[in-house]
Length: 372
Ligand code: FSX
Image (cartoon, rainbow, N blue to C red; front, side, top):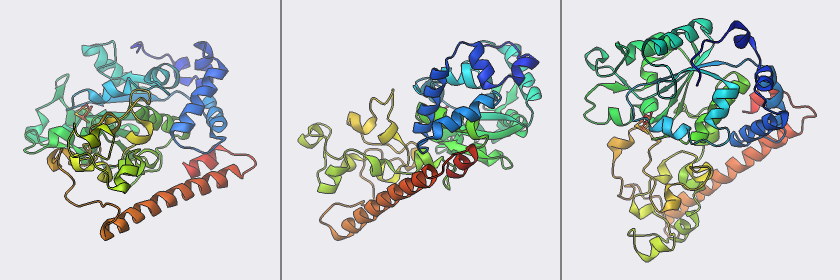
């Protein structure tokens, strides 16, 4: 990413101006909008509305702060395919500060952040990955001689909205695990007066991160979220709800060891400790590495990395202590029916939503805002 300061004409240019100057074809732009609409599960016809809204919009400033983390989240976002992080950075946003991806270092990097904040105060999107150490005044993680705590408070004050990327930023993650030697906390423990969206996962799916950012670009606000601050479009279902091995679960067919006949036949991994029934994420539908696979498809149980306290909850290779049920057992049948009803209701809601939007003669960005 370029570290040169944006001129005033660059700051005022629209996406359409910017794309034209960089040789991006109309067709390529529409393809990008279609991919985003699909990723966000928006109704048919949304891509055109998004294209219209994006064409007239200004490229927003995005500042990305990395605190106590392993850089897995940034590694993951660089694997996003549609939209790619390159699409976002070069065509749709001005990513003015990200220590891992930026060219500048030292004073130049800090100056780039100061300038970006000043030029877009009150309007920029702040993305944070990693938790924030608070013990002993926050001395356990510093950038340019300043504590993470101090930097977050200062940069969040001028942000329009925040996105906490990764389980560390969303819920404290690995650094907060017992005994939490640095007093690590989540972003929402510090920032109380701004809209914050959580994109948990250790790491989160790259495509989920870029699509959520794209939603903010299109609508100028964060998407609909659940009670843990996660976008419903990606975290509305459990891994279990959408798992392709679910049919084996329903038949009571379980692998009991990683090398037994059940494992070779691809049976359900519930008894090997799969946390899919209690984990909400899009791994089973969006998958990883350009939609190639996800842990369960590779024969490994879900560890539940996108849920709060997953490190301390542990029991990684032990079956869930609350049985989720098998066909043939009364309690479990009821649970299975409950899940089935939930899935059917969700599908019905989705189809009602699409019909409601598609029924309109002309869809506007306002219609989409209501539906998204
Ligand atoms: Fe945490 Fe991300 Fe896990 Fe790592 O930035 S969510 S340790 S993948 O890198 O924060």
